[in-house]
Length: 629
Ligand code: ADP
Image (cartoon, rainbow, N blue to C red; front, side, top):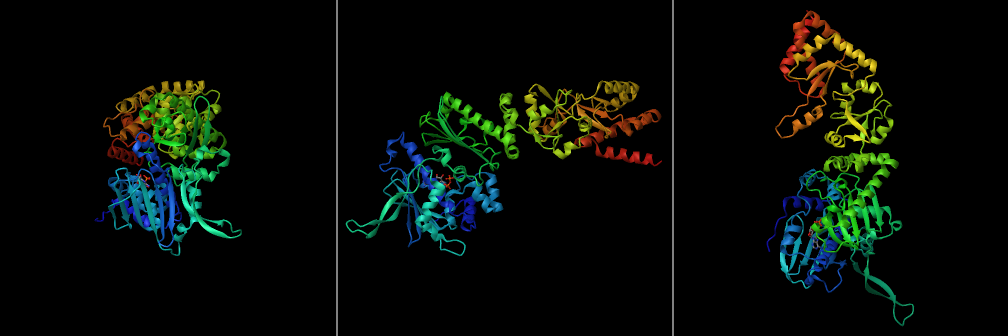
């Protein structure tokens, strides 16, 4: 039959495999065994409801080598593939689709691709010059798929007596860098199976030579062949915690969940009581490449008595812990439970709560005992927790609020709300925060001058979601949140208040005229009690949105413009205030321009564009001219 070409992305990946300089080529065996195991799972699962799929022989994977012809064969009696499956599964990359994957391919970062995306079947091309897949589903027609890589593949009908798949790798010739012959060595194969695939639930067998004493002839030996099962088959999570090494946990994680990096944290436990289950959960060390895309599959793998039931079972875990990878093995669900039934199962709702509790206690523990590690975690997945507080109408506030971190003005590092509250000044009733685009930018905000000076701690909000989160929370442990950029910040002593009131009275007309000059721009011009060295700042009226929110909303493609109601504050201790008083006395007609200039400056400081750049520039020029007259 005519050769067919691989789909474009597959071709690129294939080229990468064929020209691979990747040092861990051995992982191809893990990938093929894992595929075989999946195929066995599928057959087993379907046979529960369809008897015709049941196998006469035990489900297993067998490996054989032909040293002379340099062929390594991996065979399973799993579900098999028909022509369409072969086209769909081996002609294209199974888990491609996403743009990230395509762009990663373009960048040709080989190691990353092999690690991050788990290249699966194609990885065999790292060691094989030709691959033959002989396979049969239950419909009795077998197919042979043959490919030598770049030049495409062919699919032909063939006679195949048994259901299942046989994959033969024609190994490459050895060269200086790589001894491909190693994969014809039975000891090597055995140790690779032990290393990567020991927990596979089906026997992985191979014929091995064994020396036995010849019957009746003492001291004389002959070599016989016998079938050996290479793996112990006990799923890792069903083994004793104390017998499992960190490396085993990590290897399992990497192969099962397609990650190149070791996980940040491993959580392995079993619970007996009202609900019975074993859990093996991992917190990734890096954000999965598709985590923020809609392709990301949240959820845990579900097993019943060690038998795989479902991938990505979402109801096993609350959505705000969707970064957790792992599996649950429980005796309490039936093997053919559907996703819909799962949602309604009350046992599983209890299980969900129990899993959440364990994840939380792990995180709390990390926060207390390994702060730096926790901060790293929070950098990666803090957004998920924040989103968890925000969503569901704040229902999960108590669950999550103590896991949040915010950058502190006082500590110059990330702190918890609890730590903030414990440090609050005696007179302080509110938790202060300031919002901006970066920590550096917030540090320079004029609105924070007096606050810092008076010893108040301010939390810096740099995530868009932060303000939404505290809007939902309202308070932490009885202490309301207060923006340092809103009108109502109250940090003056009684004397300062009296003094300010007097100043306002004495300059009543000036402020009234300044307010009038900017009437269509601000609600009011008033004396500030939060500035120290800066002349002016803007604050938002308490009723209405914040200025950061205004910026955020203006980026959204909704078209509707929502604005913060702004107030212009003037520092009475600044030179500029005296200038204003002077101008007001001697050249009252200029006061409108001065008001406008100050307002435009305040806009700039706040990160807004000036209303009319040409007018702004003209007014500055005018001022410069006057200064030199
Ligand atoms: P993945 O296993 O991650 O989906 P692969 O590229 O390794 O990606 O495999 C592609 C697909 O080919 C699999 O999803 C599966 O449908 C099919 N496949 C691979 N190996 C086998 C096998 N031994 N038996 C049946 N189907 C297989």
